[in-house]
Image 1 (cartoon, rainbow, N blue to C red):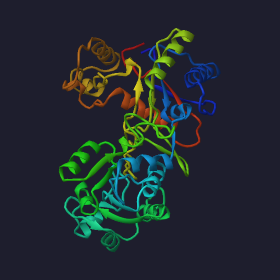
Image 2 (image 1 turned 180 degrees about the horizontal axis):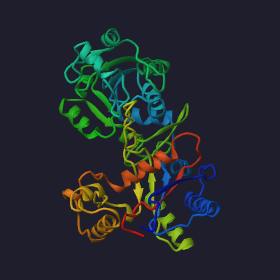
Image 3 (image 1 turned 120 degrees about the horizontal axis):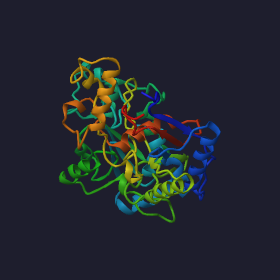
Length: 397
């Protein structure tokens, strides 16, 4: 075995990106400068990931609360608006809620429980059993919720989201009714106008509300799907994937990313002669075992990627081979047998016993999650990640 290192991921520091910057040139130049400074080479099938945040910033894909208000008022008539299944997040949702409250006179805010869609808990699940509450059948008013569970402080953020969201709504001059129910139809007891705020189950929620006789139903993906008075927008995801920028603006998910990743791939080929794969990534798809948070608050992990990142891994499980086909071998003979088996694998291994236990996920979800963990969301200053050796295997020297 001539090689002793497999996959390596590096966070790449870049200049601070501003609107109008040539993000494709910044990415390529930053990676090449890092390679020169740190003494690593760009190889065939390296992967370069760019966080969606800097792409959207370079595009200037921002919108104000007032633009959100204008679009909501164009889509909903009446003095009340139901909001179903928002996630619990200051960064992801608070500024959007400001716009919703500013657009109407009364907000009916329906929260799922015991946790939101991405795992932020309103209460510990064991408390449901203690109080004989069934989250699949029981619908709670705010008074009933408080009587049973009291104020609930999020363990990581230190925020009581029920009180926080009520405060945001009332600060905009709207009155607020808060409900706790996992059935979207519950909101229709209070209003026929409903804004669907769940992310990955939004189409099912819309269908259920329409079937139950809602007057008007739209999703966050339909708000700012087109520009409003020159605002940013996203034609497919609207406000989904947005983040707080200031107290009055949000940064939207980046749009038109495919030309960007293709351009970066071409630039690497021109400068290095190597075929580098490129993706834009947002939230990774993984779950925190302590906070119970499932990270994926973006509509997708990767909104755009080069063609070499399509598909899923096609790998065998080395430990399965060692314990089964080659159980009688040890040392160099075992290593050589496994390497030869890997070289000889053919076709799609889905369902094969020797592939059991390998991760059945798309490459972009796996690599995007790796990049998200590497770059983080704080002050590392590495919005670009260079991944090397991801497509290598045990048989390669």
